[in-house]
Image (cartoon, rainbow, N blue to C red; front, side, top):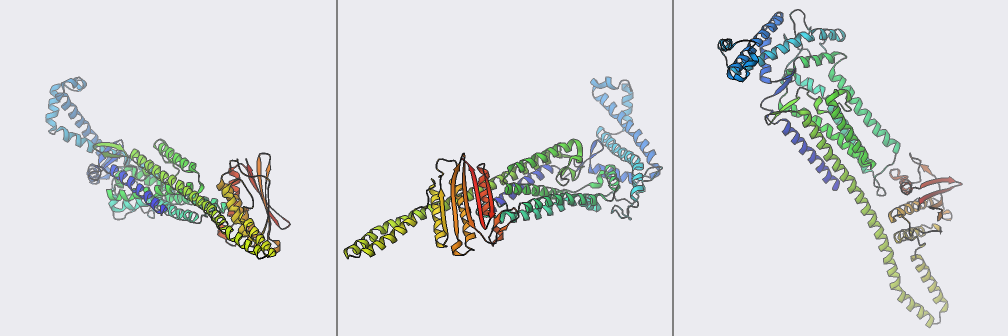
Length: 598
């Protein structure tokens, strides 16, 4: 129930911060789009206007048109200077070398337009000249690319029905007359989604890996907080997952870019005409959801890995790596990207600025802040899950110990309650002169009382109760136990929980081994000795059909799911106290020795 509740919290936090990210990103954005073209930002309306104008031009006159527009731009610049000179007397000295006041008045009257109209016209000319200049500059470059890539008809960039006359200079053609440079609402959306196909693959792989890790969690044993069986298989699973993610991403990236040098041609087209990647708010939301979902799954997997390994350093280290990557990408680009599908800035590069509350804000900062908040929130949930699970198993273990103590106490009370009845019965036998019967009855009572008494005194009341139960179980299964406790555990730093874990698992394994033998061979020897600054616990028992699991731990259990867990638990406790575990098999005797530092 707790796991379900924390899972809901995890996804609720993720959705909340994702919505916040979208709200901030698209504030004042759905009504009008802005694109960074060259070194300036233009509205989509202005870009469409320039596209329409350039499509009406004869490609052979591109160079002449560029000179004409440049000349008009200079005239408009003169008009604005003259206007400023006449309206602000303090700035007349700036332009007095160009023309006198009378000349300025003449220029303004001749222009016959307002200052706003002149500024809009200059913006339009700047955009047209930029596109024409790009067309000229990329001509030789793209031609060289095409020599290496061959025909582009199989690349998906061709459209036989569309003639793009913009990518054409006066004397040399791009040889790309049929290349699609259209809005996303047209065919461009296919290109965008193919670019992000790596996100889809990564998302599917992340879900699959999360499912596999969840199976590890569900296969946990009550005896351990986390199950760590099959260490080699566990490492292999992690390795396959990591390699799979990188491989899928690399393959998908190659597929999206095209064949060989064609990727450079695609990038050239984007640089030449960024409006070819225009997207609507809804389409951009879909792309962002894919990226955010992928990022969330990465964080989720990191949390699961942390959960399994009980190592918070894994999560902390990953956070540092991703944060450093985000910072470095702003200076060095995608060359330092660890996860190509992680960085949201790589989705649509032309959305470099967003108008938020009337001001342009770098989307890099917005994405970085949102992703970091998401990371922190997910890691906090992961940490809470780990702590709650540890507390759950600790409470369960403590309850088991108390139940054992109460059981022993109640049995002792029952025996004491019957003492009066036993004494009355003995008195009756003596009054009747049946001395032999009285002695026999006394012997039976003595044996019963002896069984109730703890077999050894360990210095730990809880451990005494556990041993009492184990000895009772041995008696029921006709197993003889020989004990030698040369030292007890009073005054040492060992917790009752760990001591019970050692003795319970040692005796459980010994009893199970003996249960497969003849009754006469069922003998267990348990000893505790003090050696300098260490306590040595040794248990020996005969065995049959001994097996070893993948980690080298011995087992006779038919239940393969839980095989070897007892000895792994013992080994873990020994390491906790700076000790070790030694296992040996010789002449049909299985021996386990546990050394604990005092």
